[in-house]
Image (cartoon, rainbow, N blue to C red; front, top):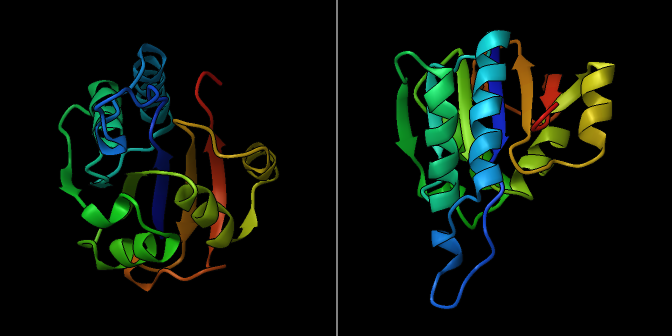
Length: 168
């Protein structure tokens, strides 16, 4: 059994003159949401043993704030260029090519997170499905379990176990 944790970056500020989309940082509420989500993940036992993160500033900052409340000892983290400004197929490829992990956290962007949260599971916990059905908010987390290793990941091959939203 393996689990894939899909985390959309927390709330970021709007682009300012001279600041690229890539360099947009988190708002104060985004920082707070990420820390709260880390606490909720920890209390729920959702502790990844590997992290793949987009190198965009808002994704990196999300991971930093999440990690401050989630981990005693952070796991190996890989910054993956393909998780920024790509598509769901690139996300799938990054997960399949990642080192073996029982629980893998991917920190990235929409619409890829939402696409995967609906394409990967063939079944869902009813509450998780209802929560996910209203959209994938910033700092939202989808937890999808699979019978086999993540290297064999395929569409409609998993089960949406839970969907966490910031502040709830």
